[in-house]
Length: 315
Ligand code: SIN
Image 1 (tube, helix red, strand yellow):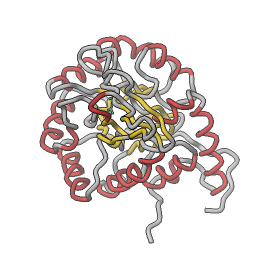
Image 2 (tube, protein in one colour):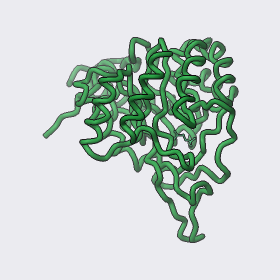
Image 3 (cartoon, rainbow, N blue to C red):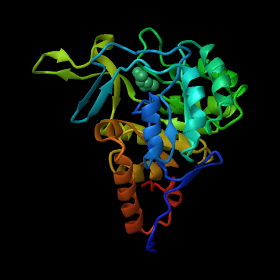
Image 4 (cartoon, protein in one colour):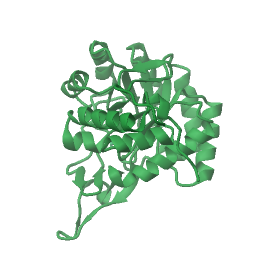
């Protein structure tokens, strides 16, 4: 591409919902409390994504449960959240910020998901993201690795949610698993995908202390940040191809710069979420990465972020 554009359009549309900016927080990053969610509303983020909510409020796993290191971060938060009733009450206030609100729904068993989804959908979020991929609750395997359970659960949630519905999936590491989950999502259709959650059950060791760095689950936790970007890009690309580009994807994983966001767009994401970099840098990360993405697209002659989606060249 060679055309130069003074301003590049960084908005996007996902499942019919317009986002003023194709960058937003990842669920979990600075989005648990009312104060955090309102601060997101006042920031440059293109959407407000809530922490994954459970039936009852949770304090989460024992601390330390988050640890940043050179390659990214490891966490085992354990779904600390206010409980879905509190988020249902908050959503109308969050909508006054005039950007999409995405309610992230989790659960400790299958029956929790439709119960939460029914009430939260009535509160009027713009989209619902069902979290099938939390790796941090001891004794609760990630649902996204059980294809039958995922299909059953999505069908039950779909039946009670009118707004666009998406799933946040764990990373898959084999094409057979990409294909199997894509078939599930074609049979139990969803409107968008968020790819990927943290790379679960990783272990970071501090050699000086000869110790794990987080307390829950013997130090095992979900890996985020720059180190997981290639895994995230591969999952975005695999699902983009499995759907022939016909499902909007929100890329998550390792977005620290405008170039990282650009790579997610090339792979097939329509928007990206920011986790570790938001926690480490704070809300100004949205301004910085938006500026960097704007500069990358301008230099390359793209008129918009949308024009980049899926254009990755293969050799
Ligand atoms: C957590 O709260 O443990 C993280 C949530 C997630 O990875 O889905």
